[in-house]
Image 1 (tube, rainbow, N blue to C red):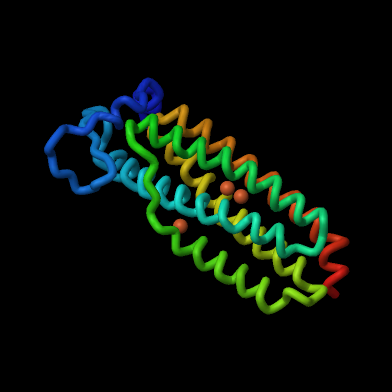
Image 2: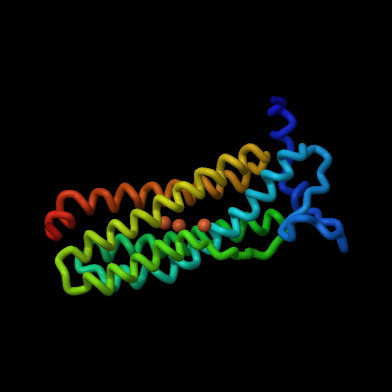
Length: 198
Ligand code: FE
Ligand code: FE
Ligand code: FE
């Protein structure tokens, strides 16, 4: 329905928070009368999920150099390091989205990425002298990218629904980098890295 009223809304509507007012969601409140109750709830969810991916990206930034160091293949090392640089830019984009809200960036523990990265460490530990190490690292790397693709796809859709155009653009830039990395890792997997492991 009425998508026209969505378009003109800007982030400023989200940035205002009445001083000294207790709100149900500690992250953000929505004084804007334009928002329906359902949209206010979606905005809360958007903000919580933004904190989740912000936490995830910071964990990933710490992990990528370790994965690069562990990898045997030069191509895989290069891919992990290049994505580590990209991840710094992604974190900056997320910080810009928080700024649009008039907030400092905040992280909320992402248990999913913590779990995936733990599996990653297990692979490094159990396969460090094995020809299958790179295949395992590559698979772990793709699990991370797929989580990110899922998150950014959702966040972009929600931002668009909420009329947060600038946020949607920034989220789309991150989404595109994750997809590109996923494709690159797939190309490294076949035929070379998996064949070496077999
Ligand atoms: Fe990322
Ligand atoms: Fe998460
Ligand atoms: Fe990524």
